[in-house]
Length: 209
Image (cartoon, rainbow, N blue to C red; front, side, top):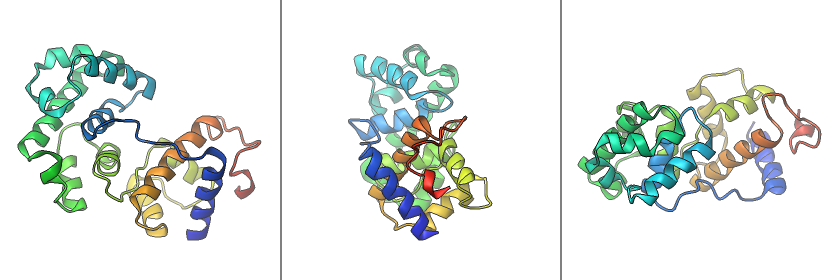
């Protein structure tokens, strides 16, 4: 399995190249984006992020101090704005009360992950995205695209988040940069070939099926 997972990565990287993901200028932007991207397309998240940026609110401290109705209005393009505004306030308050990235970075990964999961609106994918892309912790993010890849390539008889995450983390080097690039390449593959209705012809992984 180790060899297969690395071969898949190498084939994807050879075809698609580096993905430069997560597309954010600051750690704060990663956190906000991880919340906003729940149940919506990234293009909608970009519009919401742009609204926040134009109002100088792409900052956790400022979001914590901002009236929630203002936040709701600015993040409408991302959908579910009533709930997501609450989630953003919760996570912003958490970061401010916990000493921000500097203090939180000193906490071990599993403890920090649990603290994030204890926040309303933060599930496993959101927490792990924040850990990987904002804190640079070596943890593999599992999303619908990852699950699709695992199923179609019969990588394991598993379907839940923890089992799929374990598959990658136990068979790959615990390397934040590798996990970052691998996940981004899976997303790229899913958008171009491994769609809901797969386009297997010319897929970089076709020979491995």
